[in-house]
Amino acid sequence: MYERKILPNLNCGLDLIGEVLYGKWKIRLLWFINEGYKRPSELQRKIPDATRRVLNIQLKELEEHDLVTRKIYAVVPPKVEYSLTEFGKTLIPVISILGQWGDQNDEKLREVITKQFKK
Image 1 (cartoon, rainbow, N blue to C red):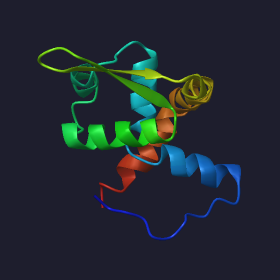
Image 2: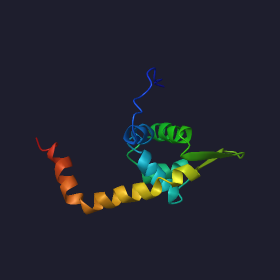
Image 3: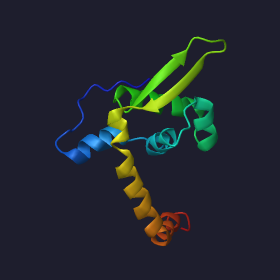
């Protein structure tokens, strides 16, 4: 796996949050874990476009940033569940507001996103 050799730019809150939430599926993972989808297979079904490998990498990064915790049950086959930490729960209102903004501006956003594919 890629290992960073240079410390990222951490000069302001936007740099910090970008470092923690950068990743195509991280915001959705946090949202779905908050909604009660805790097992990796459940999260995979909620985000079918993502590969299991990518979801596992991003879940591991969220765990390293203290946003989620992973509980491993000693059963066969192994059972794993994720849950939000108290710190992770503080992001849910922010994610909710971003989602509301996206809903309120969905026509404009769809227009600017799909414009690049019409060239």
